[in-house]
Image (cartoon, rainbow, N blue to C red; front, side):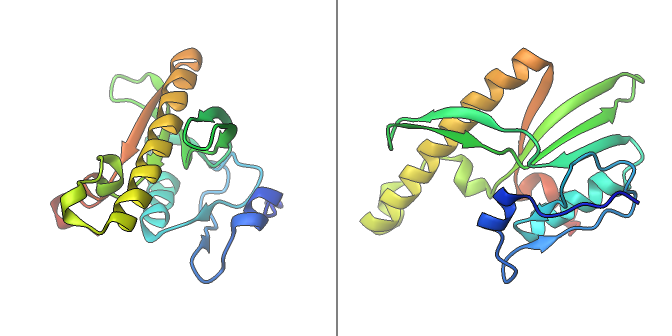
Length: 162
């Protein structure tokens, strides 16, 4: 059994009322140095998938740091994608993935007419920040041979499976 702890990044952002520390059942598959922190029930579901799916060879949570430039705040920041994983594809080849879990509505630009001005501005800033992160992630993935995926509830709960 590998002893793992919560890294300083997690300590700064971990809220026990909102987050869950996931303990892998198949610990040999989990390659992160620290416990995976699931920041939503959707992330917990994805941890369970990675942990138990036979075609997932290895996985980790928030183990990659990607620098990006936040144009709205005009400063360099770091993006920690939710998951990385190595999957044995149907053709037998191994493929590395970087996965971000997001609500579908956060993957689309907000529509001004459906919300208050304050809510619109908050969602606009969130969406623009996500775009900057995802652009940096795509560049990183091209450079290192990974496939970048954004999964939403439409992917996680297909066919009513929860």
